Length: 335
Image (cartoon, rainbow, N blue to C red):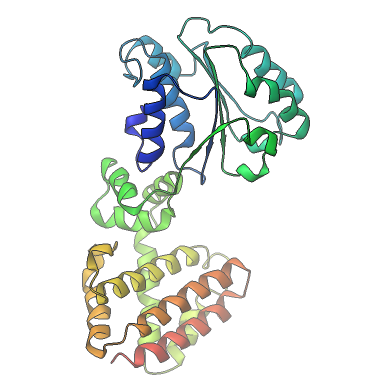
């Protein structure tokens, strides 16, 4: 993965490419940010940029050096992971020994520490002097999604490079590149929560249709005249198997209300679920008609609260009954 190919991390990628081009790349970097947003890919991309013989400073991905780096066979690019739940002191000593010598064949050596927050005090202290002053040509990249778990002495000896949750637009580009339809890409982007890994899981899942069926059933129950529809809809999720898809369905429902809200406010370009245009138009049109965006905002809040209740192990039936009753009251004011 070339640095230039990493989606959604333009700021971090630009900073790294500038540092490499100027010859001022820090000898120790801390790549931090949410899970599954490209941190480790960026570490490998940095290694390509430093070690490529065909396109120094960027990487080509096709020369012998790049191919060996990507396959994990290059002697000057090594990735480490915790041996157990933590890095052992023996691992830290191995890293120190490697960083105390010249690169074997490449212009630089890159040592990548995955899950660097798993450094315990002993292994972290073992690395301090190396992080501060490794042998010339050696670069250490610490990758973590929990930087606060690192010792302050480790953080102070590294150049921090921040990675962010991927935008919906970036996620949809990734989904489209993998052959997803616009509707699939939109749904997967909502479920991904800014993470590439979760996006790929959503694309590989066959649950999209069933999720939107749940969303449709919940909305119909909230719009029904009698209370019986609400109790029946909530009761569908009384057993463990039936409630597995409920958190994701509520995430889609929340996004539907959020998109309707921004559309009604005149910012339709911010809506993500454009393939669900008819539903958005109905909700947004009703809100504009009554000149009251508060109803959609309150409905969105009720769905988010229901999702939070599920995450807190509140009984799903109880959480859904409350949400649907509140939605019924709110949406009655739109008609």
